[in-house]
Structures are given as C-alpha cells and as structure tokens.
Amino acid sequence: MMLSRQKPAAGPGSKTEPLHGKEKKKKAIPTLDEFLEARDFTGAMTLLQFERKNDADTDVWLAYCAFHLGDYKRAMEIYQRITEEDEDCDPEVWTFLGCTYFYLGMYKEADEAAKKGPKSKLQNRLLFHLSHKFNDEKRLMTYHQNLQDVIEDQLSLASIHYLRSHYQEAIDIYKRILLENRDFLALNVYVALCYYKLDYYDVSQEVLAVYLQHYPDSAIAINLKACNHFRLYNGKAAEAELKNLQDQASPAFSFAQDLMRHNLCVFKNGEGALQVLPSMIDVIPEARLNLVIYYLRQDDIVDAYNLLKDLEPTTPQEYILKGVVNAALGQEQDSREHLKIAQQYFQLVGGSASECDTIPGRQCMASCFFLLKQFEDVLIYLNSIKSYFYNDDVFNFNYCQAKAVTGNFKEAEEIALLIQSEKLKGDYVYLGWLARCYIMNRKPRLAYELYLKMETSSESFQLLQLIANDCYKMGQFYYSAKAFDVLERLDPNPEYWEGKRGACVGIFQQVIAGHEPRDTMRDVLSMLRNTNNPQVDYIMKIMKRWCVSNRVAV
Image (cartoon, rainbow, N blue to C red; front, side):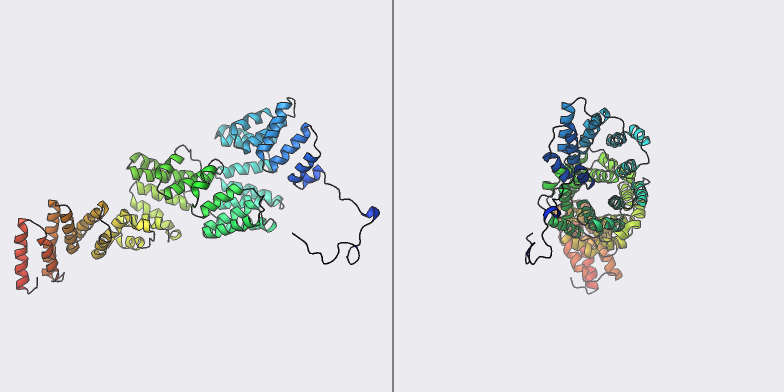
C-alpha cells in the first residue's frame, strides 16, 4: 500500500526530528527463542537458514518450524536425513519423525518410528492416537492409563473422545481446562466443534464468537461458522462466509484450502463434486461420504455402493449412509439381502444410547420399521420429529406412505400435496398412493385425472388397474367402469370385461337409487358398446328399456 507523504518524514516540517549519533540505534534482529516464543515459525526458519550451520541441532529446529507451519513432508525429510546420517542422533528425533508420519497418514511407519524413541509423554500420546487409528482397544487402554493430569495429555484424551463421537466427554475436559486457563482461546473452537457435532448449532455459534472476536480471520473458525450457517440457514449463507475469507486471504495463503474447497462444494449442493471430492477422499474424512451422497442424488446407486462397500463404519453418519445405500440398492435390485443389511444398520444407530433421542436416530428407527413393514411403529417415530421436516419432500414422501398404509388417508392426502419435488411427484409410488388417497377420500375424479396426465407406459397401465379396482371396492363405479373400459381396449383380458360389466351394472343400480345423475347412463351405454361380447346386448337391452320408461335420453 502506498502512503501519501504530505509532510517530509524527517527534517523541517516534520513532527519528529532526525536521530543523530548514538540515538540512532539499529533495530536488533530477534533471536531464535524470541521467534519461537512469538510462534513466528516462518521468521524462525528464515533466521536458521540465514545463519546456516551444518549441525543436527539446526536441522532439528528447521524440522520443528516446518512441522508447526504444516509442512509435514519437509519436516519428515529433515528428520529422516538426521536419522540416516547420524546413527547416534538424539533418540527423541524418532518420536518427532513418528509425529510427521502420523500427520501424513502413514500410521504404520509412525508406529515403527515412535517405538524407536525414548519413553516420554509425547511418545505415549502418539502411540495412544495410533492405537485409535489401528482400532486396537486393548492397546488404546494401555496408553490411556499412562496419561497424566497435565494439559497436553488431557487435550490428547479430549481429541480421542471427539474422534470416538463422545462429544460431551470432550466438552467436559475442554471446559475444565478453560476454567483454569482463560487465555487458551483456541479451546473455544474445539468446544464449538463438539456442539456442532451434537447438532447444537446456535450454541456452537455463541462459543465460536468468543474466539472470532480476537482472531476474526481464522480459517478454521470461519469454516466452522460457515458450517453452522449451512445447518441453521442455507448453503447461500454458508457460502458467503467462506467467500469473505477467500477475499481477505492473500494469493500465497494455502492453509485449509482443501477444506474450504470441500465445504464450498457441499454448500453449493454438490456443484463440481466430481472435480473436487475424488481427490480428497483420503484427505478429508467427510469427502467420501459427501461423494456417496452426490452419487445417490444422481441415482448412481452402484457407484455409491462401490465407494462404501469396503468402509468399516465407525461413526453414526457412516452407519446411516451404509444403511441408505444398501436400502436403495436392495430396492433397485429387489435384493432381500441388501434390505436386511440396511435394516440392521438403521436399528444399530436408532437403538444406540447416544443416538436414540437424536433426530437422525429416530429417522433410523423409522426406516428400520419401514423396511420391516411395521408402519404403526414407523408413525411413532415420524410423528415425534415431523415439526422439524414440515417442508422436507423426502420426509413427507415416506410419512404419506406410512399414514396411507395405516388407513389414515385424509392426512396422507394432505401430506402428499405438500410435496414440491417434480422428481418425486412423477414417481409411480407417489402417484399410486395419491390416487388411492383420492379414492378412499371419495375423490375418484382427481385419481382418474392423475392417469390422464401420464404418458402411456407400463406405470400408467398399473395406475389404471389400481384406479379400476380401488374404485370398484369403494363403490365408485363410474370411474371404475371408465378405467376398466380403457384397460379392456389396451388388453382384451376377460377379467377386464368382468370388472367393467360389474361396474356398469353398479352405476345402473346407483342411478335407479338416485345416487348418480341419470345422464350418466349415456356414458355407460357408450362404454358397453366398446365391448364385443354376447352379454352386452342383453345388458344394454334392460338398461335402454329402463331409460325409455323413465324418459332418460340415451
């Protein structure tokens, strides 16, 4: 930025007179300790490279600075060089090397390196985290017992609680440390992250605001704030938060760029997912799950299944997604095996102590009972969460079906009409249930109009059969006869003639009883003429005789 110089910096006219002699002191270059104390690792690294000394001590500090700058690969390469060049190097370098391997996702190498280092609190914490990564419970508990009541160990324990979805336990540890160390402001971000995971998005925002007041340009905090906005409001609001961060950042700013690209893709409802997410599958844990969701939305169920089939679920989200994918594949391929697996995953999440009273947990139990066709139980769970999903088309699609199966057709019709998605409204399952609701609620004309709006296909033929049979069962013979008449013309099956014959006689009976307008007889006789059957003449003869004697024009 160019500064405007309206007055000279020194000399006549300036407010500060030039310094002379001993007063003109040269500003001292900070020492390495001062750089490290200020956590200025870039400055420390620059100083070390400027005063380059070819000794192991300098290399260790260079690796330390690179590690804290997030350049784990460079730190690893320096530590590796130290261990290769000097067999008698400080054994703690092996522990440091293990840390770099851990951050690079090289867990086996991290384990081997850490075990070569001396016993220390850092080594114990590293092996504790590696035990979690290896899913080794027995070993995890061994290192857990070695943890002490010091801040670093307690933070390590809290992070394991977080990774194991024990968010409340993590919050308790963070809050206890914060009570004694008010200046540990970053812990507010961890607490906010735990509340986000517990679905308390408004509480998460409040806690996060404490940190953002001091560090308004924090990439991690703004990312979390954007995620809260996504949950509380919508993708547009979340996107705006990240855009602000991107606008403020310099071109050289690279920290958390992958995270921001991932989140922006999610906020934009999967826009550019195939360009962004595949490369991040092994970098950001949620990338795999979000790519699966994208495939499901595109109806690429096989691709979604292939992406998840080898994943051993550990979090509720992973169990739920595996359940959804197996349910979708089971329905598409008519596979009882996949449906059974889906039902078990849903039951596992919905029945767990940590999830049973959450919204996703109740959705899982509803899905489990849906697959078991126990719709009374489905409604128990859906009724308890319906206020959260009033405008959710997928929820209403399932809720409508459960209501209809249990005979509550009036409410089922109201719920079905709330659905706005054109994709769902064109689905045969939706059309079939809405037609049945219309018929059961004595609105057969609306059901028949659903058929008239459809293009000729196997599904329109199925809908016509449903209308013909359901209307007949409900005594709505006029629309039953119309449906059977079309069916008979499309497929000269004797059963359709029998249905049509019964419906026409039923209308005739209703006209005689005064329950149908007499003019309806014209349509009845017209439909009967479409059938080439010996019985037609006899039926029409009786109907015409009645029409003549009752002065009904036919």
